[in-house]
Length: 140
Length: 138
Image (cartoon, rainbow over all chains, first blue to last red; front, top):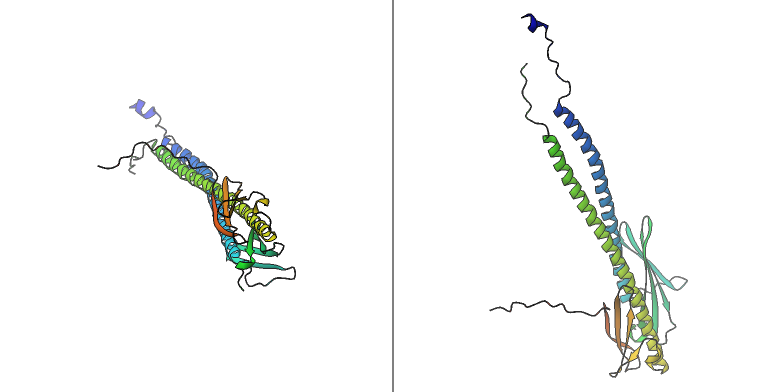
């Protein structure tokens, strides 16, 4: 009876193994999540940039073909003899176009088409194209 | 106060964590790989587009020179790269920087060039692969 009274009560540990494991798991998850979020952010930025570039290329090709099909257009030239206009494809995408004509060929005109795709941040792409239009093909 | 025994044993949260982290890493890596592949494809498209318009520019200038030669009464073959064929057509090919070639055939019999063919095609010849024996049915 006396022995039972003298033994100290069993002290319980304040940190159970499950609690310690949960703490480690949460810390590791936070660390991993930060790395994964960075990966996803990088993937998102790359995808947005390439999507924008794809749209820019498509817009540039479309305008180039339109201008090549009809390089004279409304024939409104500035004082330098160049036809300058801009096609707004989207809010963040515009194609600037400069068409200059070269009358040196004997049987036609060589139209030099300079295209520049611009975004609010600046120039994205530039493209030079040429269209030779024989005099016989020019509408009267 | 009655204490209920914990239903979650040691290791369960670690297994769950491993599964979640592996899945998230897999999806994030896949999306990054896909985005990079898309970006590489876009760059290739840009290079290809630039190469096409460069070849097209040279072809248009050659056609203008061809017309000039015809107007001046000079043989079309004086224009660099132009070959006069038996059927009164002039042909020339412009090599693009991306492995394509722009082949142009123009009719020059009327004193000016009239484009008959304007083909942008791969410079490499088509090689047939041996497909083996195909089942012909029956």
